[in-house]
Length: 156
Image (cartoon, rainbow, N blue to C red):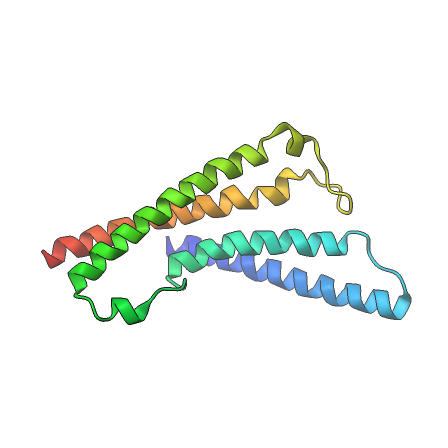
């Protein structure tokens, strides 16, 4: 799973690099030459969506999301583990809801027929970031469950 996360990290680095390069080129072209690329802003926006959802999944996997250390630090390890399992369950329920709605949106007839104005790509490509990122989060959530239940078994 660590190699898979490395691939995701490389993907995110490439996306952020492309976003930076395209933004700098767009600013230079607009202010020095008085013209802009018709696709640049759209590309950066869609890459930002992908970075947000896929990056959120990577952050979830690495445990870099916001938690209340103040509360958790004062609890016993067993109670902390049980609290993490409950939290994971709530997160998983929300992610499953988001996955279902994200998939329904991506495969809706309206979205399938649309193409982007600047890039001319099918709109399913930018919107696919939602179910893909959420699907990755679900995968990492399940991985987290196994670690938590193993930890709970050792504490008992």
